[in-house]
Amino acid sequence: MRARAGVLAVLSVILALGLVWAAHRRPVAMPVVPRAPGHCVLPTAVMLRTHMMLLRSVREEIVRHDARDTRFRLTGCVACHVEHTASGQPIPVNAPGQFCATCHTYVGVHLDCFACHAAVPETPGKFGGLRGQGAVQAAFRIPRALRGRFGASGAGGGR
Amino acid sequence: MNDKERDEPSRDGAEIEEGPDSVRRGLLKMAGAVAALTLAPGVTVFARDLVLKGQHKAKGPVRYGLLIDARACKTGCDACVRACQDYNGLSHDPGPDNAQWIRKVTITDEKTGFTRSFPMMCQHCAHGACVDVCPTGASFRRPDGIVLVDKHRCIGCRYCLMACPYKARSFVGRVVKDQRPWAPRGKGTAEGCTMCVERVEAGKLPACVAACQKAGHKAMMFGNLHDPKSAIAVRLSEVATTTIRADLGMAPGVHYRGI
Image (tube, rainbow over all chains, first blue to last red; front, side):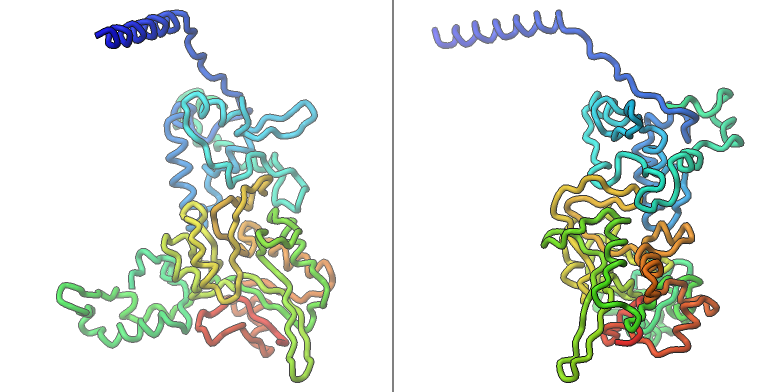
């Protein structure tokens, strides 16, 4: 009987502390996602919800069915969304506070694209790469003709 | 004959050359009038029209391949190996757990002392053993003949490493950093020569071939084997060449001269 009363007392103290903590807790701030220049390939609202499906279906097309000119390839995302240090060095998009990591940390979803894929774009002229970074960005910018399809303001921002 | 799932050879009518598959196809053709083969009660193999009409003989428009002139390949030169490693982000260190997409091989005839040195890499077979054994379909052959690993599907079982008679596949056993954007690679997957697929698609030569030309040896030639006017097809029609272990019937896309 005494033991049970002790357990109850401890539990109520924990509960009370939890309530105090909950009352004083500050809400988690919404992530601030770095903005990329130009227009995304689809409106931001669509990309927010479907980018994982897009990447998943498109990777099949790209790898297996040689549709390498698709707009939704990961290298295109990285090329636009990478940030640079003051000295001009690209910061990996999965580094803390960067484009991919910001949201994925907030929602607690593990991001493993970059276990294999490069998280920085190719450096022009280095290792005999195919295209400069600017060319990659240009290639994945949404065509002007298509922008109207997603609303009056174009493709919905450069996020 | 589940061509629909193993879609690489049959997609857009790509070629099927002599090989184990064509033997099976031949057997199926014999049962052509029936168009279905009953193996056991309730187990029936249906042959697709494509097989029965013999359309599998049609060659696809593109099959990329290499011609390596072992006579021109210089002993001690590893320009192709270096170029591959640089371009695809592989280590120069020949450690036991480092991937090796291309390597220099030296063969010697013990009786005569005749020695040749030449590069070996994925032979991009029409009927690759790696594609056959892969349990997830990660090892696959593109319609243009390039054999790749779909690393999204690879589970790292290493069957392909065992199956390949050319030892062309490597396994990535450690975490990889600083990958090239065009060559994703990561721990737990098999990999091998991609024939620099993104360079080829951009109309450039594979890195090894370009490096060999730059080094002045011109021992490697790249092109479309199915285009009779291509330089490589013309050369193949003019000179005696061979494929390594042709007896296995895997129809490699890499041809050698002078071995």
